[in-house]
Every structure is written in structure tokens, then in C-alpha cells.
Length: 216
Image (cartoon, rainbow, N blue to C red):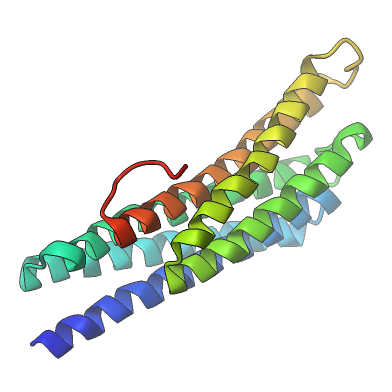
């Protein structure tokens, strides 16, 4: 019975890693679509989002079944509780990325980004993909040091998000209302994607230490 339980825990972790990879793929396609006005990539990102939501639901159902049948305690219980929370964060990452793809889809064949902010969004996309790569490793290895590294790197995304708002609200901003709405929303989606990566890092810390608090 114990061997079956351990195999189920491995399956949960494997599915979390796969969810993370899929969320990263959605962000990669969505950000590329947003930056290049590639409608085919936007459609691919949107299609992948629906599938990822189904996989997250399947994982949640597996975890609930394990909780009901195995009655885990101590660290095993923490693993499963953390898995439910991380599944929700990863699903939300994919959803946020899909919102970026939707903006690109709606503005096609035009661009959703004015030239003045293109470099900022290119950097924001690069940082988000870098964080996604690290969270995939974190889900597999549950390294607290890597969790702390992720939180430190999230600050760069926050700074870029604030930069977008400073520019849009500044006296030199002269773009039309469509650009204003698109870049404001997109910046928020990029920033929230990174925030969910940080949320996952906090949950990994909880998994390893039993201390449920933000990393510092």
C-alpha cells in the first residue's frame, strides 16, 4: 500500500512539472504573438490554454482522490496540499498568458504595441520565460535556494510593469486609447504571470520547511 502511495506522489509531481512546461509554452507563443502580431501563434496559445485547464482539473481530482483514500499526514499531507495550490497557480499562469495572446488576436493585423514600448515588453517577455524555466526546475527539484532566487528575479518584472504605467501616465504619452488599454492590460498580465511563479516558490518553501509565509 505504501509503494502505491509513493507512486501516486511521484505522479502528482510529474503532472505539476508537465503543467509548468505547458504554461511556459503558452507564454512563449503568446508573447511572440503579441510582439510580432502573429495571429497563428496567438491561436495556438489560446488552444493550448483550454487543454492546460483540463490537465489542471485532472490533477486536482487525482490529489483529492489520494487525500480521500490514503489519509496522509505530516510531510505527505503538505505535499498534496501544496500540489493543489500550485496547480491553481500554474493554471492561472496559462490563463494570463492567453489573455496576452487574445490582445494580439484582437488587434491583428495591426500591432498592440507602440514602438516606444516595444523594448520594454520584449524584456518583460524574456524575464517571464526565464522565470518559467526556473519554476519548471523548481517543481522537479523543490530547491529552496532556487525558490529564493526566483523571488529576487521577480523584482525586475515589477520594475518594468511600473515603467509601463509611468510612461502611459506621463506627459509625453500621445498614443491613442487602443494602445493605452492594450499595453496597460498586457503589462498587468505579464506582471501577474511572474507573481504566480513567486507564489509557487513560496509553496515549495512551505513544502520543504513547513513554514507557510512569503520568502524573504
